[in-house]
Length: 208
Image (cartoon, rainbow, N blue to C red):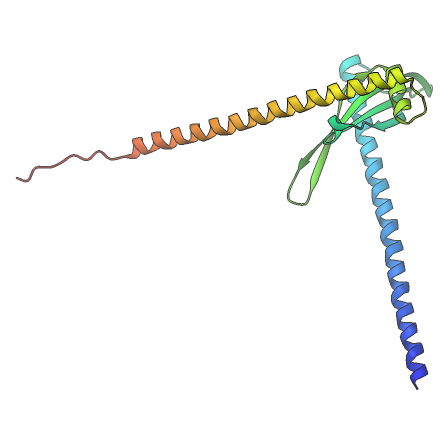
């Protein structure tokens, strides 16, 4: 009697564990599919932005863009920014030949839609020097070893950029605070004017 009860308990536990495993696997697959879909969508948007940039700046139209390398920049100045070095091949559609290879700085600007949702707009900031970009990516990925002097200079440059960024952030905060104070003063002045305009002057009357 007790033996059958024990085996039934194990069977129930086994079924529960199996259901949980299936749920985890399905959730993982669904999540990966969603990530791939989002990544493909992002790549298409950025590709279209690069095409638009080329059409505006170099009057290049009817071209195909293929990604060669995409690298997310790191460091203090990119802590709150999504900035990428994007190396692309510009291909002639008719011949399928690579016309040229170019590098661009691409940034994603994220804004809040509501409490739970955000949207990201992608833009091409500028064209980059191709060789410098490739070298910077290779150094970041540790494919190229720098000398002690080169590493020292890189640290000095990073430190300088961090200081400039802090100064810039402080100036922006000051500017925002100043605007808020000015807005409060302006609002207070408008209220005072409105009160003056709507106030009824008291005129004493004499009793006849």
